[in-house]
Length: 387
Image 1 (cartoon, one colour):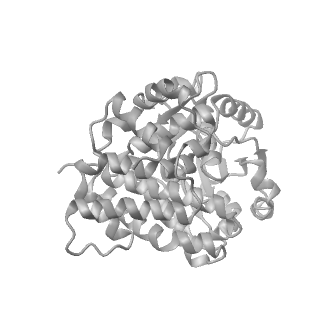
Image 2: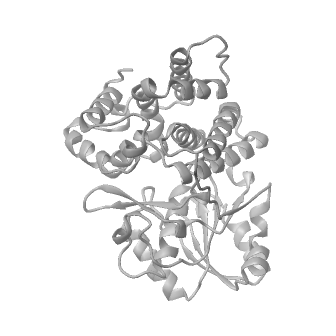
């Protein structure tokens, strides 16, 4: 079974490691300046100040772009790129969740490539390396710190475009669980279920390899053990760190395998209704798993076992059904809505949702062959709560 596994991002993990970023920039990147991409919530929460102190201690100058949007728009990325170029800096530091990291990756790549970021929608179309990106995630969900993609919203068409290229991999990811200690429970839930969706879709993807599946299944097991303690206890730092590592592993898995129908549909929900990505993924996941069950019951039984079920003596189909039950139960425990109707989705946009979802490359590597009629059915079932 021939395959290629490529992960050029160096990952360092440990409590307080983000406080060494100034030293790392000086020593490993020979940088005397860095352009920081974050959002106002991170700044207002005080998470940025210790990182800035590290930069000041090492006399690393910095510029600050804190205008990241929840669903990053192409216009926002191009605005950030103009500010990066005006600053004269050639290194980018992302501090935040997936939106901040995706924005930073977009800004860094557009600083060295002509045109507009939407010109590069698709796979492998970026001609030049971008400026080096160092990513410090503050949520355990997207895995963007180790992926070769950035998701960009076209505000004019309400479409979330995927720009995918090996040139988008960050150079370094610093996983510091201290930055996730005070996350509100609803963000812990949404980002944790985002990571679980990445791992499950990666594991069942047609593009999966033995290596990516190993990463994905381990991520599923870690999330199954640690998401609830992170949510209900909050400052359980062992669980917080395990969730960060699991999120990274799920990201490393889908960077190789791509994803599936959950993401094909959730991206259109985000583009049209501006729904938070992790919540959309979580609400859709059981319905897509039900749709996919006939084609990969053995893999779904593996998922049930990784989530803690005793599948001894179960048929593949019984184990797969148990996996869906476990995901539904996890959503319920974490306060995730059972239907996309509860997220504000309306069916008057159904034709556009179907059309936009079918444009996603994720449909092509979903384990079950998918038609526009299938996408329509999944959306309607998720709207009405029909499992």
